[in-house]
Length: 448
Image (cartoon, rainbow, N blue to C red):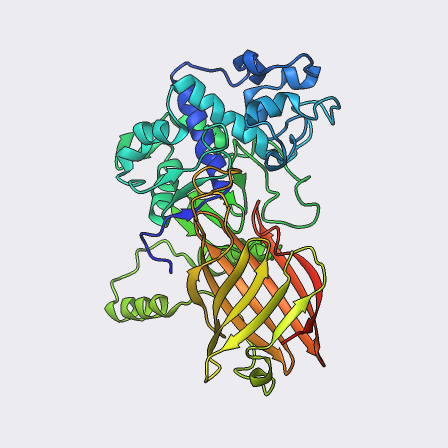
């Protein structure tokens, strides 16, 4: 389903874009990196502001050496994330700002809100007018919103891989693109350097603990990267004049990102020579054939099971369970190559088509998930695009894999095992603020 025009969610790569916007505002003289962030938002400060938080500077927020991350905003009733940052659960201080490194996504959102307050534009509009329009890219890109209408500046840039590559090229070249200077070099050189140690992030070996700049990660071989959840990576390697872009959804696989980054260095970076490769039409065709054959990963297992015909159409009633599923059934095609998972939950009757050992593309049937505004439940029938596959793991055990492939990415895997007229079901999900009712275990018994 992915091609060069697909706009992919960048997740926390967005933070690096926000940091560049902060640098542009500094260049305009609209802010000081060493000013306390609280001084820019007096209207957001409540009755009590801890001293270390009050003194926390813009620079300390850029380097994530803040007093500690704020609360999870999806779970709070207040819609203003900047207000929440300064007021919610701030009675206790964890450490002084400017000392320890701690991942602070909420702080990145406040940086984005500062961009909007001082520029008078949305974060995306400001970057487009200052940078993107000169790159000739980001024409179909967007940045989603949070509940109060602010840009979701720590997580929700949606753009193409080519958009990412063009922006990375601009940063790699120190603010110059195709011979035209768009931003001062000094800020970008600092932003992409090791300003602070970030060993606290992962205490064992990691490609993500080589230091931290301004919302930009240092990594191996004098390289830096923009780093987003689910393995959204843009790696810039100045010594080889190379940009590497990766979009993915590896949520739920904690070391997949490590493997992708280290593989880039082991397989690509260390094999880049100094000379330009000569044209080779045959190898170009071979590469095009390879990339054209790539498919989205799917469940894998036996192609069929003797149990299929017995299972097809059988209805199982469920004991009370965290998912709220009251009954389910599988219905297979005559040849067993595809089918439907049918179930009932609090929203009513649901159907999920699937392919056996391949993906069926469609719409996930759950209603109410967020669309253009994070944390706001839709009421217009909106649903996410999905890719669903099924596999036989044993004669009487199977799994269903759901991949959400929309402006929000996530995944859910459900295991079904049958014994006599009973079934055990286990569902596991990895997704930010959705698929929450698709996680847990249940016992079911055949009723039809």
